Length: 337
Image (tube, rainbow, N blue to C red; front, side, top):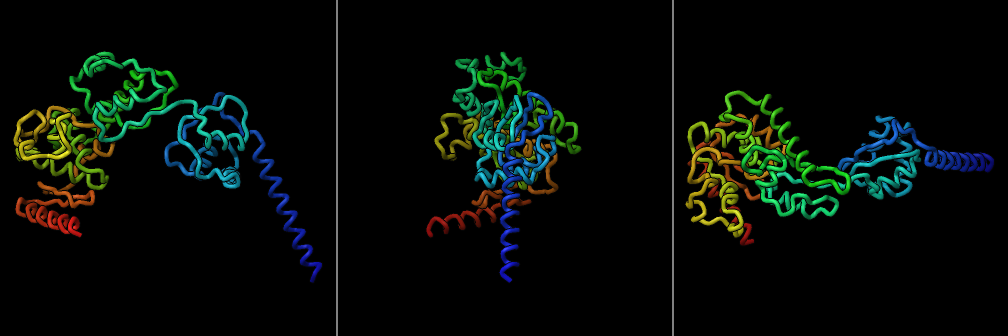
């Protein structure tokens, strides 16, 4: 019996030594570079398993499971940093893990958020120390002229996304890329739009997309929000959407909408004017652009916030008034409690 136990222990020790030896061998064996220099991008939120599969698919490593095990042994599973990376010479899995967890990126990045207006976008550019600030001091119109943009208003013309750039690159280059991507995305979406939409141009669809972006952050609601606005346009009913009023108020907006704000006319007040506002009010993301060109199937003409980020949709004013009363009552009870 003791002999069997000793053999078992010996087998475990040998297996353990072999496993340790294999990990050390794998960790320090140079990986294959598909090309030199080899560049790759790790996206935000990518898991260790996803990255290992990416490296395997690109021919960088042959053992994705070994890469995962090594990262876990090193305690680096949760420390991977997004960005653009570049390998100029042979490297090992151990060195590769250190590189992507230290954030040793070859390029810097800037993020433009869906729903931002152009002023917020410029502020992010101005505050990024890795960018060369060639637009500093330029008016919006002067900036558009530098980019050879024909549109009068810069709002909504740039696609919200993460942009990578070499340190010292001009902010004009970043803006040009964002402008071109928005143009291409909008053009592609326009070609595949649903029939009989009340838009004459892709720019009008962009305006609608910006309204949808500001009205809801819930992906599943965007087609319904689009449908309500489109239903209103079709019957000549005013859009009456608060975000356009807020945008029209500009820096005078104090954080609260007042009755006088809704009744004071300006180009962006959709309570006093029919149709779409003259331009976008924010940067819409792809989901809002798609919703503007592929609205949901509904006859709803109204929606009201439930107070939890979602909305109640109604077909008639009577239904809408009931929904408003219900959610106002619910909100009042919550405040009391």
